[in-house]
Length: 260
Image 1: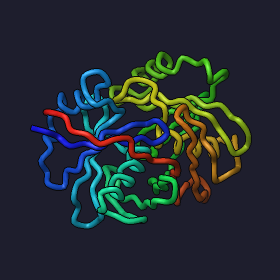
Image 2: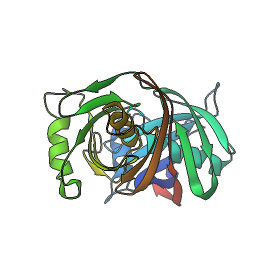
Image 3: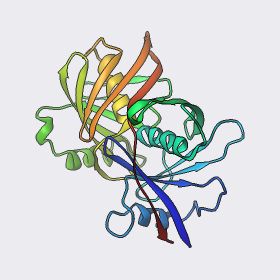
């Protein structure tokens, strides 16, 4: 069977997009999804996303990591899916859609900039050497020296598979403060099991964590990721973070077909 796909990227975080409104895609075929995401034997991507019908919202997002397994929320993937829905004519400039962590509001602006509403965060675990929170996916956030030369894959893997987070593991973000409203980060993503050029839920986690531990008092924060720049904004009321938005580019790369 010939599978039509679209490729999108958001600050270097890349995804295979499939219009599955007719429910033709074999969603339980882990090996197929893994092969499609493979950078040597397939299309190549950090993840695969299905756009599906939903009776209560504009569409449903179904996200798979590159290991072929369905996973938790992906912020950059969500932004790219909004751009994809716009390209298909499913939505115009604003949307509400459903994902594994609930409803999301989003808007499409000029120059392929997509702003995505993320879940509220009401628990930030502050530890001596790191911070942990869930922004749709679990994230470990840790400030490090010399971020540019830090071994993200080795150190991230050790934390992800270590005793701290057990079998489920966690995404791991290493952070450097640039100034009061700007931070740089590098992320080890579980499911990809490597460093990615960007992680939307990770950027969101870093922005909230840095505010929560007092590294910044800003509620609109610039994030330098390996693949570009993102902005995370939120409202803060005590220990609760609401009206959280992740904003950045979400760009169409190419369209094609592949035999499956």
